[in-house]
Length: 298
DNA sequence: CACGCGTGGAA
DNA sequence: TTTCCAAGCGT
Image 1 (cartoon, rainbow, N blue to C red):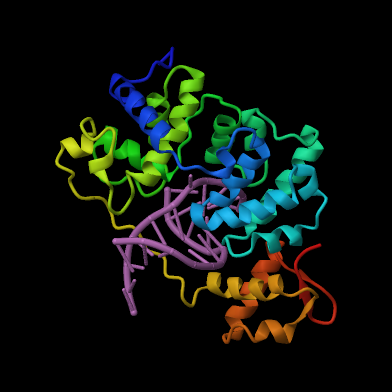
Image 2 (image 1 turned 90 degrees about the vertical axis):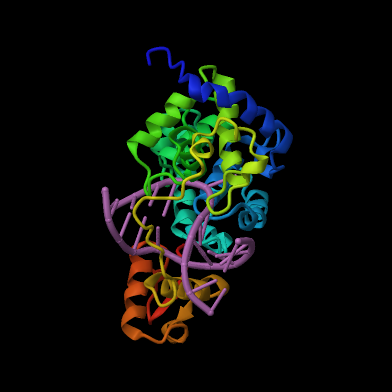
């Protein structure tokens, strides 16, 4: 505890997972040498709930257009929303834009390397702060995302799935599993996450290819099925979320302010449509103009 | 702490 | 087809 030496059980996982990562890691642009903290930060925002394959094109054009935080900070927020395209959860675009402005104002335009300073940025929570500090700056942090929670739930706890929502216990477990050495800890963070993304997957884990299958508590227990409360699957069809998506798509694709009539055409239920539009305005994703016209925020 | 927040691909 | 799920955050 005092020396953060970790548990022997977890320590036995380090070498095989690190070796597996060295041989099997995906080549991703934000992992290239010299990618920089801004590149890591942009990728982390985009990867919050959006799969890698769908992020790649948006990431490339984003960094080409705004290679530094100051470049994005100088833009209208609506341009960030438009460039976000259909990655989903467009409030992330607004937060990334606000974070870029905060970086310019508070950190001289450079992504801070301090965990607390990162955590204070808009859109940066526990996971993202640790991810940037670890991936971009090589620091020792427990980087706890859904992949890591699943890997540790299986390998150490011996259950098929982690708890439905992240818990303090997850954080503690990940902190305990962290190698003591800083640079090793940073490699472990990305490697254990990659293992969860490629091998120790949610639906059909590829245990035959897993470098720690002989030590995995879940496998050793006979791979018992998930036994917890049912996970609430979210329906999407007909929701306010879908309505917001339709409205925003109209505005994204327009080069000039659009009329209320154009927005009305994209969703039949007037009550739901108005509620969704009000919500978008309240979130700062849509700017109402005079004479019933709307645009992305400037 | 539970919920709202987009979108699309894979099983 | 339906269902599940994908590097979370803010309230």
